[in-house]
Image (cartoon, rainbow, N blue to C red; front, side):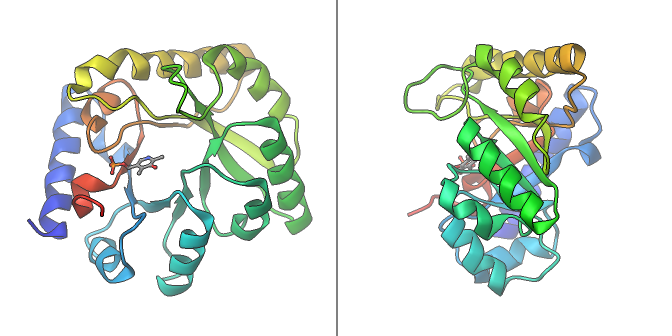
Length: 226
Ligand SMILES: *Cc1c(COP(=O)(O)O)cnc(C)c1O
């Protein structure tokens, strides 16, 4: 299967899942996760069109940023080291992985210095897995309330990574919990919850059915990474 074939199959699956959920597939963003994928291959998905490219390491994002067209919408989806913030602010459209106060402060500081507003999602560790990054669901409301007061930083929603499973039905409650949390934040804090970034290759249909509107998909498009 070529990358183009994979992409069109993923698009069809997204359309079908959106239909099942009574959602408009045009309002679901597909971010192709390109970690480990060479730029020649990434170019193949830029033509039929994905909504953005996602990277989880600053260095890799920066080198691809130089090589790919300037209109690419970049998403930072991995653990962000505080000392890398100044390199990516102004280049990425959305940081999905705000997971600690020191990072919020640094994003705010750098954005203000550059005269920009950085758009971020708060990463939630909804399953409580020790190996996963993100705030505990019970910490999120207070964190969002405090981080919302920082200048230069705009919280636009939540992101989560579900545990890996053979059967994506098992993680449906994880997605549902994050959706409910976003509704609560909207109600209690009038927080802008424009985006819910949930769903990867193994579970994006279930995530979409539960309210995701940004899907981060790597392997289902590019094949198994080495
Ligand atoms: C790698 C990665 C993805 C994509 O995972 P696939 O299973 O390859 O689709 C999504 N989100 C994050 C944060 C990732 O690191």
